[in-house]
Length: 250
Image (tube, rainbow, N blue to C red; front, side):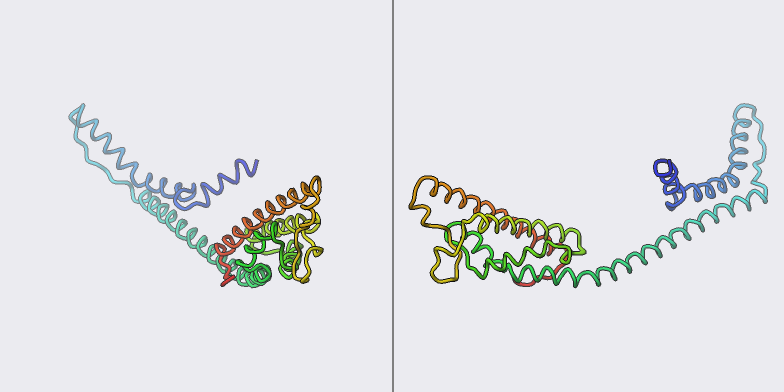
C-alpha cells in the first residue's frame, strides 16, 4: 500500500520542485484569488456588451483577496527555493561522502589488482597460455597461475563491485585452466630434463589407440580453457581501466 500508492504520491507531488502539490496549491490558489474576480467581470462585461448593449465598469479584486493571493504565490515560490536548496545541500553531502569512501577503498582494490597483474604480465601470459597445449609451460609461470587462485577468497574481495565480479570470473577461468593442465595429467615434469618446464606427455602419441586419443582430447580441452582464460583476462583489463584503476605497463 505504502510503496505502491502513498510513497509515489509523496515523491511526485510534495518532493519535486514546481510539480508538487504544495507549490501548485500556493501558486494556483493565489493566482485564482487575484485573477478570478477580474476574469469574472471581464466575461460578464463581454456578455452584457455583446448581447444586451450594456456597458459596465470593470472592478479590480478587493484588497484583502489581492493581498492573500500575492502572499500565497510568494509562499509557493519560497517553498520551491527552500526545497531546492535543501536538495542541493543533501546532494553535496552525498558527493563528499562518496569521494571519501572512494579514497579509502581505491588503494585497497588497487593493491589487489596490482598483485594479480604482477603474476600475469600481459605478453608473457598470452605467450604461455597459447603455447601450453602444444609445447608446455614454464614452471615459474605455472606457479604464478596457481598463486592467483587465492584471489577468489574473501580476504581479496574488491569494494568495486564491477571489478570484483570480473576478478572472480578471471580467477575461475584460471582455476579451470589449471585443472585442464595439471589435474587432468596432461602437463607434467616427466618429459622435461631441464627442470624448467611442464610438458605434454609426448610419449602417449607413440602408443596409438586410446593413449593417443586421450592425448589429443586433453590437448583440445587445455586449448579451449586457455582461450577462455585469455578472453576473460582481456575483459578484466578493459574493465579495471574503465573503472579508473591505474595499472601502468603490464
